[in-house]
Each structure stands twice: as structure tokens, then as C-alpha cells.
Image 1 (cartoon, one colour):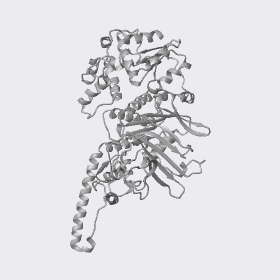
Image 2: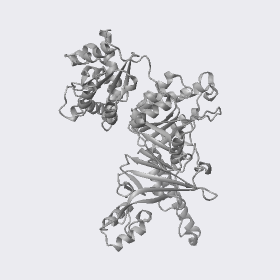
Image 3: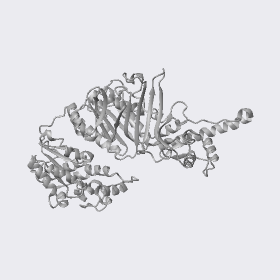
Image 4: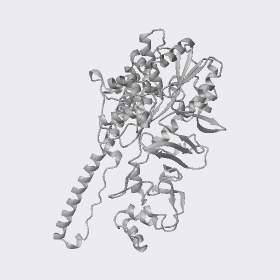
Length: 606
């Protein structure tokens, strides 16, 4: 599952209900004590309630209500769930999804009594017609009775099958958005929540507050979550162990029952074992990991900068591992102020690790930051600006808040930068750097953008491209801009025309080939991955497009059991194939000198 939004109400500074969209990478910025960490801690409470535990002091002091609500919305829902023993179904068939097809879970914490009460509800478009609104809380014998009463032609084994037959027998289910209680003391639907909860993403919060205890989170948390992640990847084996233990227990109970019969028949009417396997979180508690540095010095005895470097290394390693592991369960890394105690070079390493992590198929990254340098290197669409508006805390996103973000963080232009280079995405940045470097080796009059401090890249593609162009957000920097976009998107031609009509020295062009990957030489891909991919200028089908063609061949070679997503394929090509490009290979793929012309134009502007 993938988290797509979080809604908070009456939690600390957020008195009114506040909803925030969440993407692959999401960055919360704002002034001190404005509520950035509050959002991450609300999610920690929702997923774990462990590292941060909710208590009565979390209730907003200006609100009369004593109830806190945290709502999380998910997509990429699992295809199958075992909501009842031995029977597989899915959330859609059980009417447990919203009108949009998402899973919305609301957790409420009531502090009106001496002991906090927690309630879990699923907000779904669910049947409300008389007689069929409560099927999820009915046991097998109750569903059998309804099926028999309605004379339905359905197997009387398997609760999902019977529920579907009963719902299908009703002409109008009267579907409405309702709250279905699935968690709480003695709740009949708690088993449903237990199964859904086991599919939720793992949430790993790394806080910026530093301690010097042996249990220092910056030392322990990466290893704890490494254990949790490892356990999630062997869940099938764990399920098999639990199944075998259950069989053995039941066999022992049966033999004990038989033995009891021989002693006293009156006591032997029934002896049924109620097997309860360990909760999901209990398995990780069985293992522990400690880290020693050179000369056997425990890591927690080293300086904060060194300890923090473990965090850098952990995320870098996870970024690389997630590119090769296809875990069933998602993971959300939430990091407060990753720049803390870090040299700028290490901050850059972290940024690249976060970007790579967020591009994995089952991974999301949430950040808070005060660092202008770190925020300026992250995708613009990831920014969530937390601020006070009309005496209420709000979370805003989109290009309309860029000006306020710049003012809050104190972003200033680098005086060494003389040209801004706008491209669609981060893989285009890597490609342009590699191509310019290869040509520079052969002709040092051309700029090497991999090392040049005079050219700054702006990733302006996707849904925000039109805003960058139409609103000319960079005008205050008074620097000429270069815009180069792939020709695969028709509307980009309009933006190119607008940039060229500015009359301020800016320049724009569409690639003559389909997209930047079409400038790759087949030998560069062969050298990088030992696979043969046909590269042409204008693919006739989607399967002929270079990222897709590479994904198909590479996935088959690696035995991945599926095909890499196009975005993931582009990342691999940018990281491994473009560095194999040489001036000669560029000229073979581009005999008319289009690519060389781009960099000649940039050199003239410099």
C-alpha cells in the first residue's frame, strides 16, 4: 500500500482539520515550532504508537473537544486479503474502499475519561440497505442462516463467498459513505483490521533530537527498522512456521482430549485450543543488533557527527537495496532535519539517497528541514509549506507557495551561477551532465556541466512545467534560462515558443529525437548492463521506446518476475548507461550535431 494523504484534527497545534497530500517524497518546510515534526509524529502514532505515544497533553489546548483524529488514505491496495480463515477476498469486493477506490482509515483517541479509548474505523462506500449493512461482523453460522433463508445457490463454506451472494441478491444496496468500526475492545470486526494492518506500510521515524544513551535512536533506529524490514520480506516463511506450530498444538490438544475421555467422560465434552500467533510487531522484538566501531568502541560512544553518519550510510544502502528488492510491504522513511550535524557534502549524499529511495516501487520518504540548501535540491512538487493563516495552522503545496518558501528558508541565488538550465526530470539532469562531459573531453571549449558552477539545473517538468514557464518564477534572479524538453509531449512546443519570445536572452528547444534516452548508443547500454537493446530515433510503439525496451530485456535477464517500471528503467539508464557515452558514440547517434549544438549555445550564453 502507498500513503497518499494524512488528515489531522485537534492534535497539538492543528486545532481544525488539516489534510495534506503525500507523494513519493514529501518535504515539510516552515518556521520553527510551526508543526512540521507534529505531522511526522502523528503518523508515528497512527502506524506504531511506540516511539511517540499519544497522551492527553496532545489534545489542542484551545479546543473543547477531547478527541484526536488521525486519518490516513492509501492506494496501491493488495489484490488479496484473508479476512476470514482460509478464504481470500479483496477490499473492493468487501465494500471497504472509498468512492475513489482508496482505503481510508480513521483512528480516534478519546481522552474524556480516565483511560484513553482508541477506535479504528474504515471510511468506505458501503451497503446500508436493511439486512445487509452488518455482514462483515457476522460469523459463518449467521451468514449460512441468511443464505438459507434467502434460498441462495451458494456454497455454505467461505464467508466472503456468502457475503457476495447475499449482497448480490439485493436490488439496491443503498451504498453510502459510512464509518465502519473495525478496531476497539471486543469488536466483532477486529480480525478484519488485524489483516489490513499487516499490509500497511512500515513507518520508520528518525527524530532530530539527540540523546547520548545506549539506546540513542540515531544508532538503534536504523538497525531496528532493518530487522522489521527483513522480517517483512520473510513473512511467508513466518506464516508457515505459525501454521506448523498451530497444527502441532491442535494435535496435542486432540490427544489430550482423547486421554481425558478415558479418565472422565463428563469432563471430556469439549476441549478446543484457541491458537493466537504473535502479533506482527512482536517478531522484531525477538532480535537485537549492536554496532561497534574500530577498536571495539560502541557507536553510541562516538561523537554526534559520526553517529549521524550511520544514518547517511543507512539511507544510502537502503536506496541501493530497494532497487533490487521487490518487497510485498511498503516502507515510509520519515526523517526530521536530516541536515543536522552533517557536512554539506554529506547532505548532498543524503539528498541523492532520498531521491533514489523515493523512486523505488514500495518506498516513500517524508522530510522536515530548515536548510535552504537541502530544500532547493529536492523536487518542487514535494514541498509542503506549514504556516499560520488566519490564526490556524495550514499545510499548503503547489507553485503558489514557492515565494513564501523562499522567503521563509532564506534561499538566495548563488553568485557563481550565470545560466539556469531547465529540464523535465532528474534523469535528464544526469543525462545532460554525462553528454556534456563526454564532449568536453574531446573539445574543452564546450562546458562540462558535471563540474561547472556557472550552470544550475532546474527540474521543472511534469505538472509544474507550465507554471515555471507561464509565470516565469525565476525572473527575479535576472539570469538567462535554457529549456530543453523531450519531443514526446506535444504541449511542450508551446512552452518552448513562449521562452524564445521573452527577449531576455533565454533559449528553448525540443529534442529532435523522441526523448533523451534515444540519444543513447546501443553499445553504451551493452557495456553498462550486458544486454542488447535496439535504439532508434522515433519509436513506433510503446514497447520500442528505449526505457520500456530496456526494461523488458533487463527484467527477463535478471529474472525479476515482472517488468521494471519505465521511471525505474530511466533511472538505471541515467546512472549506468549515460556515463558510458563518449564523444564518438554521441556523434554516431547524432551525426547532425544537435547535442553538441546545445552545449555550444550554453557556452555562448556563459
